[in-house]
Image 1: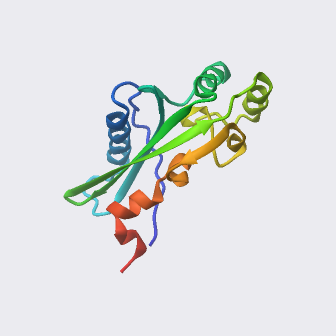
Image 2: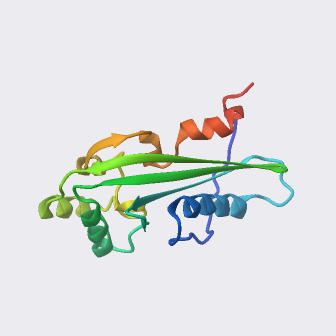
Image 3: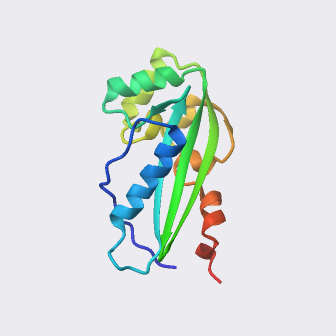
Length: 164
């Protein structure tokens, strides 16, 4: 199966019910890149980090990243990812939820991680698949969801990806 990657410039919601925000952002992204009159399948995805009902999006700078990571330190937060598949006349949606527990983040560990620059453009200010793994004590649920694309949930709603 061939595919084309199209980056979306759709504005992302940052406030509200975390589940609804995640699904709405994924839908906005898919709609924004769908070609008018197209009969192709379009996938949109959005991932957020949430703790105590607050949404931790992509930090605007190193100071915001430090603040976000400090809030997550020695706590368990949730990573929510929504996937939306748009087909001609049909919309399929799924939500994945994974719990991630951070270790207690010392000042020197935060300094080291922030210096990697990996936090840029990442929900919650970290990337578990890279150096951010050093911040994590435990994961309960789908690891791929934390990376940013819950493949299992995508296949639940769009098994056609696997072919005939």
